[in-house]
Image (cartoon, one colour):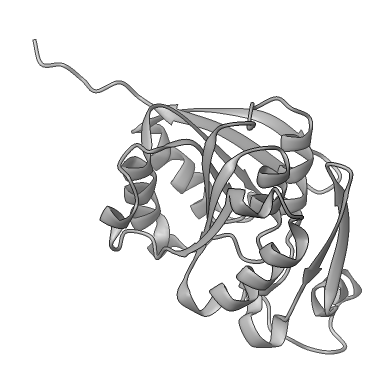
Length: 218
């Protein structure tokens, strides 16, 4: 589901989404992301939350080298690509319709020697989670994945499955609606959550979360 309709003469601020590609430089690599708004909508363009997440990862505040990571709702794959460039063994996931475009971006932007660190895989939140190891990831990444209320519970279920007690979750998002805060409040019932970064120019927040210890009955 697209957040905004495709209109050729729409607002100038949206024009970047209609470009066939978007260029970035992270980790001393030129990254060229193919975009196709008409075909896949939100899954095929680079959102500001992904760019800010990459900036944050590049700052080195979370150790990625040698870690196992998974990106949820990867879309174009920019965040997963940067995570791999920083040394993580990363599983880059999205729903089936986005996988061809996602795979193309990942393969075309990771050089030999690094490409084997990244795997593209289908993941629809809350479904077939046994395909992924329970608590099997050091880092869970998500950029602009909190915006549809009917996905909140499946997303939470997915995060709970993927996370161990030592997993770090990083969520990058713009708080557009009250329902976005609703998700954060739901998340806080199961995870310790803190804001660790804010990009004022883009109005993007990054939240860090970790599983709360299980309550022990006395």
